[in-house]
Length: 570
Image 1 (cartoon, rainbow, N blue to C red):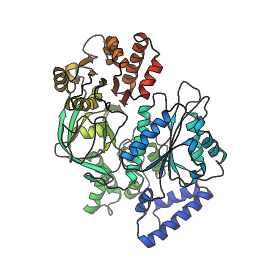
Image 2: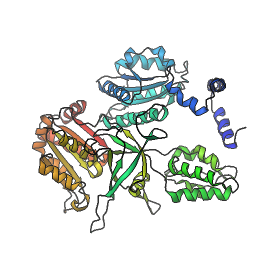
Image 3: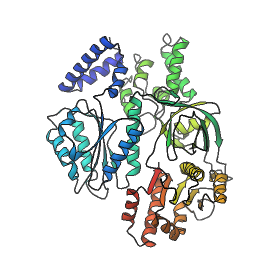
Image 4: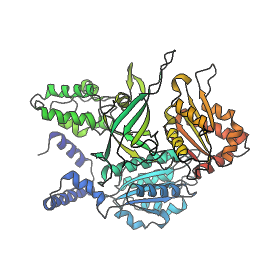
C-alpha cells in the first residue's frame, strides 16, 4: 500500500500523463521489478547506475555561425574529460538525425542567425525535430539548451528557444532550464556548464582519490576564521571573513577555481520544526534514534530556508484550508508551517519527502596550492537584507561567518577554465576587482610570485573605506614593495566628498591602460555584476574609443574571443 501522500502524488501523475507516458511507466516498472528479482537492487541504485550503463552517453552538439558555439562546445567537452566524464562532441551538420531517439543525455549549444533563424550548420537538425514534433516521442532523453544571441535583435536567442520547446514537446526532460546568453556570453555560459556538471557529478557513481562524505562532498577542517573588515566610526560595517580550510594532499585546484560550500541549517530553526511536529506526532517521535535521524537530515541535507516556488506548490496540496501561499516573499519552513498549517494526516515523513536538498554556494578560492600547502582559502562577505522589518542573513554566508576552528565543512572543487592566468607567464595582466572580488586575484598573485612570472601585474581594487575595506592590505602592499604588483590603483568611494570608483581610476590611467591591452595584456574582472562590472566595461569601451580611436565593440569582442577579457562576476 502507498502512503496517503505517495498515493495522491501517484494519482496526480497518472491524471496528468499521456497514454504513451503511462505505457512507458508500465514498461519501466516491469523492467525494474524483473531486475530487482535477479540483482536485488534497490530503486535508487537502479536510477543512479543508469548513467554508468555503457549504452548511456552524453552527447554535446553545436550549431554555429561565427564560431562561439563551437568554441564553448570544445571547451565543455575538454572540461568533462578533466572530470573523467565521457562525452561525445559533434557539429549539428554532421549529426546523424536518427540517433536522436537513441540519445540519453543531449547538450545543445546553438546560436541564432539573422531574424531568429538557426545557423546554417543546424538547419537540418532544426527542421527534423520540428517536422517530427508530433511523430517521435523522446521518452528517454534528458537535455539542456545553451542559446547564444544578441539582445539588440528582436528575436533574441530564438533558435535556441525553438529547439528547447520542441524537444520538450517531444517528451524529453530538461536537465536544467534554457539559458539565453547575450554577446557577453562567457560568464552565463560557464554557469550553465557548472549546473550541468553538478547534475552529472551528483548522479554518476565514480571513484575519486579524495577524502569525501556522501554525495561526492569533500570533508575539510576549518583551520582559521579571521574577520578582515573593521567597523567604521560612522557605523558602516561590512562583515568579511577570511576562512582557511585544511584538506588532504589529494585535493587538486588551481587559481581561478571555486569551491561549492554546503551550508548547514541553524539549530534553532530545526528545534522549532521538530517541536512543531512532536506536538502533533507524540507517539512517533518519542524515540531518540528517530529524533537523531531527523535532526541530521534537517541539519545537513534539507533546505528549510528560502523555500522555492516549486516546493510551495507541492506543500499547498496538503493545507488544512485551500489558500494561496504568497510567492513574493522569502519563506522559512517554520514560518510556513505556522501561517499555513497542514492537514492532520500530513506527517513529518511526508514533509521530508517533498523538501528539496540544500544547494551549494560557490566561493572563489583565494589561496595558491603550492604556497598554502594542504589548504583552501575563501573570502566571504556576510550577506544581509531586510525582510518584514527584520535583518536577515544569507544562508551560506551566515553559516560560514559563525563557523569555528576545528569544525568540519563539506564542499566540492569547481573547476573554472574560463578564468585562468595566461599559459605564457610573460604576458601582462590587469586585475580589476572590488570587495570580495579580490579573492581569485590573491591566488593569481601568489602564483605569479611563485613562478617568477616576467609579465607585469596591474591591480585595480576598490571598496567604500580605506580603513575598513582594504582587504589583504599587508599582502598587497608587500607585493607592491617587492615589485610583484607593478602598478596599484586604489579607489575607496566614501573617503572623500566626490565618490571615486575603480572605473574612475581606469579613466584616470586611460593612456597606459590602452597601451597595455593594445600590446596583449589580459583583463580580469571580479566582483558584483551590477553595477560594477557593467560600469567598468563601459569605461573600457570609452577609452578604446577615445584613446585608441578603435571600434570598442569589435575590440572587446576580439579580446573575448581570444580569452583575453575574462570575468567572474556575481
